[in-house]
Image 1 (tube, rainbow, N blue to C red):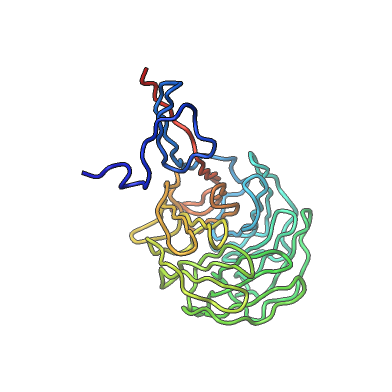
Image 2: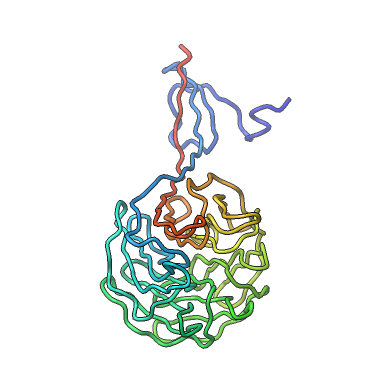
Length: 318
């Protein structure tokens, strides 16, 4: 029979008072309080305020926060491309000024006050356009070198990263310096409909068609990381290269509610979203993430907030 010490690496100790810095999963007996205490890591999704415009194939500021999100572009109904942008304050979305170029299947980077939108598709075809957001309005930037849609993106407004996409699938990656895009080294696996998170010098590309592959970017080249537990397309993502979160998407046989977290080498499953959906967008951190929009089979305006935190549970044994 397994013991707690064998499973967790430490024993249940009897202490006169609670420890100052308890570890995840630690259990102890407080002899003064006559109570057994456990320190679990709890993760859950909760409903946030709805988008004003339900849409799929939208993008977000992937390095925004749970209380300062940015959503832009998308389709409503498909294939009608939209130019609306909205800002999230932690409870509700407010209409912002529109993108100059309506589009869907685009990628995003940056924050709510310094956002970046690039690529996508409009009625006239696939776009190379990039635009910068200053917290009030969008302004045209220099174009991508390779027009594409269904691409991945991450980074900041002055240090963005674009990779993969369609027509293709493509393996191209490009770096943005706040003024122009320059060719970077290619992905190891060409793909479209993938997701990105992190920074230009520490980026993460994962999922897409036709791969479960994860790749890490160090500012120069891509290296394979651990595979997703479930291969899928059109996910949302948040966090960093060593603490990432992937959620939702399209997986066989349909829309997906699953959430996985990345520790810099491997993915593991955590709590499911309340609403299974694909073609959504996200932002925030691994522990405080934001998911919005997408499609459940019909267009969604739902927002969900993910929280993961160490908590303390006590059982009185007196």
